[in-house]
Each structure stands twice: as structure tokens, then as C-alpha cells.
Picture (tube, rainbow, N blue to C red):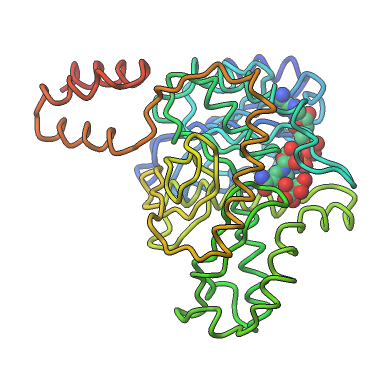
Length: 403
Ligand code: NAD
Ligand code: LMR
């Protein structure tokens, strides 16, 4: 790692690219590896500083940061490296800059896939499909080869849901649940708008749901939302506002920011990416967090699409879907409309989907594996392992040998 950073630093012409810290301090956890693609871009710039400060993985967690950019992005990345160095972040164990995906994703625990073109004024996110989806096919392959066995991948680059599908399909040995597309920004926007309408504090708003695609077809749903523990709809008492203002405003907030800023949202997107991974890693109690994850067929949604649903994050780096919520007719219609768009997007990138229909889609299998292992039932472990993707089979073999 240190050698990697040093050689890249030489290539970049930087004087010092890696700061090694003493890990002897017993209060600090050994480093976790985080990769960020597009690290010199608008979101990347805001994101890496906050990761380095410990806001994402905790103030006691050392971090090895792998910054991945295109060849053209290497020069601005050199400046980002300098600023990371000048920040003297005590938790930053090492920083590596590279345009080599296998190096950048080598043994990483978390990958934040930001690098992709943003849309400009007048464009829809789906207009980015042709150029951006290819990037995620390549990155999926490299993650499959190089990432740690239990790595988690957050896709931020647009069109995020379909890019996550493409990345996962190109990583045949990884679980589909290892890939999440970001809809947390939409959730935060919805929470803020509801809080403003109700004259409440945003921290008191919960159970707002984003269903479906991170696009104008998404369905921001207040059916289950609460303010200070009370049903939000009984506080707001304004269905017309919900239908005519709240929903379209959240759906089109990305475009509203682009038209005002002349560039797509960056600091708020970085914040939402950080919130997503922080909740996965450290947990957020019983709070519901919307994440676009592979559909397991719940709520009648087509299996295998990356569809945003409410999830609960307990801090073990997994999510659990909130299942079997009651869905009224209006919600069902909205949920189907955004599902239809995701099917169309999937069909537009079929050429990038090698097709691994038999990939397992449930963490339940992994949980049974762990329980059998803990109970010392190696016969059951072997039975379950037969059904696992190759990368996990390797992990089971290693764990058995070490047991
Ligand atoms: P940006 O143009 O400022 O930065 C993108 C960076 O990615 C650039 O530095 C570029 O060199 C790099 N890049 C491009 N291709 C790459 C590749 N193959 N590998 C590594 N790096 C690569 O854009 P931005 O504002 O940071 O936005 C990045 C993406 O995030 C866009 O697609 C944008 O639409 C999306 N976005 C998503 C959300 C969301 O909620 N999911 C929110 C905001 C923005
Ligand atoms: C956003 O929601 O702000 C981003 O997805 C950028 C965009 O294109 O809207």
C-alpha cells in the first residue's frame, strides 16, 4: 500500500502522497479500506475530506483511502491529495491515487462509485445511460476480482439504479446485496420539505420513503411518515399539497439545483453518500433508510431491478428490507410507474448484462451459514456453501481451515 501510494505520488509529482500513522494506539481500530471513484470531481472533493475526518466510519476507525480517477483526472487529483495531506487527518492511515481499477479496489471494504458524467441543464438522468453504464460494467469486473469478500458498494453516479445493476451483473462472484444505489439524497430532500411544511425540526421527521428509481419517476411517499412520532399526514392535513407540490418537488429537486447552480448537487450528494455508508457501518437503530437495492420480489416489484425501498441498518454493514407495509391504490400506481422506467432502463443496457440469473439474492443464506458455523455444524456449512458464489466458497474454506 505504501509503495503504491509512493509510486503514484512520483507519477503525480507530489512530494508526499502517503502519511503513515502509528496504529499502536489501542483506541484506534485497524484500517478499513475505502475506495472513491471520481475523487477529483465535485462530489468526490466534498466526500473524501469528510471520510478522512472520521464522519463516515467513526472517530476511532483508521482509514486507507484509495482515490480512483481517469488519466485526465490525475492532475486535479494531485491537488486533492495535497489537501488531504494538509488536513493532517489523524485517522487517515494512507492515501493512494490510481487510475488502475484493480489496484484501487484491491481488498477494499467499501467502494463509493461516484465517477461518471453528471447531467447538464435540460437533460434527464437517463440521457447519461450510454456513456456511464459502460464505466460500471468495467468497475463491476474489477470489484469482482479485487475487492474484499464482504465489500459493500455504493453507486452514486447516474443513472444510479441501473448502474448498480450493471456493476452487480458484471461481478458474478459477489452478492447482489453488496451493491446499493443511492436514493438517500431524495430521502433527505423529502424529510427537509416535510419538516418545513409542518414547521418541525428535520430531526423529528422519520419513515419518509423513496420508492423506485433515482429519477423524476421516483415516488416520495409520506403514507408512513412521522413527525415527533405522530402520523405526518394527520399533522399536515393537506393531501393536495402532498400530490401537487411535495411529490413533484422532490422528484425534480435535482433539476432545480442544476438550474440554480449550473452544476448538479455536490455537497448534499456527498453528505447523503456519507450518511448511507455510515448507517450501514455504524447502524441507525430502527430508523428507516431508503436505499435502492436488488428487488427480491417484495411489494410485487420485478425481481432483479435495483429499486429503492425502506431498509433498516443495524450496523453490521448489511441492510434489511422493511417488508409488507400496507400500500394504498395511489401508492401502488406510483410504485408501478417508477418500476416501469427501471425495466426500460434495464432493457436499454441489456448488452452490458452477461446474465447470472442464479445469483443468490438473500442474506438469509449467509446468516444460516454463520449460525451453522457458530454451532460447529460443518455438515450444514458444507451444504450451504455448495450454493454460494465462488468468492464466498473461498471464504468458507479459509474460515474452516482457521477454525
Ligand atoms: P464531476 O464531473 O464533478 O466529477 C466526476 C468525476 O468523475 C470527474 O473528476 C471525472 O474525471 C471522474 N470520472 C469520470 N469517469 C470516471 C471513471 N471511469 N473512473 C473514475 N473516475 C471517473 O461530477 P459530480 O458532480 O461529482 O457527479 C458525479 C456523478 O454523480 C454524476 O453522474 C452525477 O449525476 C451523480 N450524482 C448522483 C446523485 C445521487 O443522488 N445518486 C446525486 C448527485 C450527483
Ligand atoms: C441529483 O439528484 O441532484 C443528482 O442525481 C444530479 C441530477 O442529475 O439530478
